[in-house]
Image (tube, rainbow, N blue to C red; front, side, top):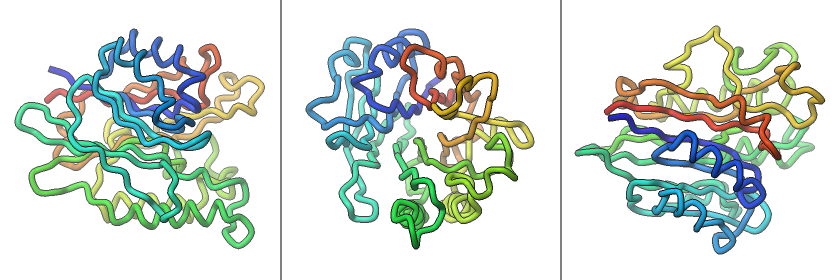
Length: 266
């Protein structure tokens, strides 16, 4: 039997609940991980998700900014939030779910975007991003008796073919060498498997984000792979496919990110 997990930076869940519902009705993932929900926990639209079968919901929110949530058809054990960089931002939440005898720790992240200038001496937001990435290097994929999945808007496109032009974006936040090397170090130190590239190796292009600034985003197709799904290596053989729903970028009042779904066959 298949089991699916979707990650989606929704850029305000209350504003975009209609397209969230549209997606869930059509695609029916078992677990939905949202980032940038932009609301406090008591403001989160619980009932529409529960009406669609997502009875198990954990939320880490804050007023007007950031925020992550997990909505699941299967029970979620625990509700863990890590305070990265000690600034109190709602950027991480995790839980454990079970598939048969397998226990799986699921992490949902929203990594800081980092502002526009890739220089921490003049741009504190970029420094904050680098510090956040540094702390993520301690996160291990392999734990005794528990497999791991990490999803989210990590705001870094680490590989040359994760952006529309490697050369033109080398000095653009999200693809600068210090960021890309930092993400590769998280993966290496933590023993993570990049499931999207496991399924679709380079040199194939993969994008999950298209800027609002583009007059015709689809024709220009200047995308970046900012959204990620990783796992502990033991889950790699069970990956059936990765679905990137590019059409969602053209829906009514869309996010600039699209849903990315990993489908497993355990």
